[in-house]
Length: 162
Image 1 (cartoon, rainbow, N blue to C red):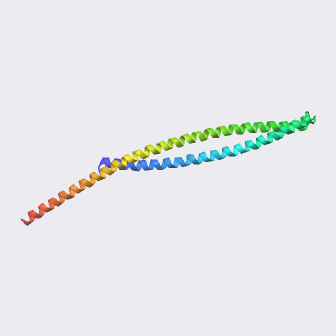
Image 2 (tube, one colour; image 1 turned 90 degrees about the horizontal axis):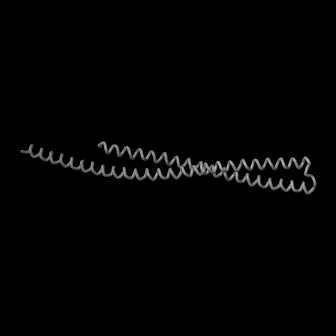
Image 3 (tube, helix red, strand yellow; image 1 turned 60 degrees about the vertical axis):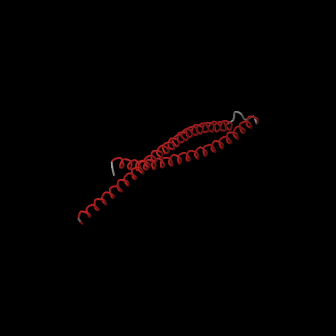
């Protein structure tokens, strides 16, 4: 095997290894993306629960105002709960934005990995074609060598008979 053949073979093996690591990387990215999507769904559900609780507290505040209990300790406690829920709601919105940004980054990484795989597949196909041509060339050389050896043996046999 000549240097070109070795280089081609090494290239094919290296590309196969790159493809494997890229596929593993894609699997990790998809897993992260799925995990983040589940987290966003859970947070969104929590936000809806908070919204419902805020509405309940708003109704209670209105009820206390109608009853003339606007300056009572119960009203202060209800308003405190309402503000606490509003703060939690804002924190969850921030978390959703953060996770959404992460998901978008992972999606970009998946696209980049897809492009890498396409490039690696093209290179591997090219190397495989070169390797096939080299194999044909080696087979041809081997045939010619065998033919020459057979001719030399036939000549040798003729000389021995004479």
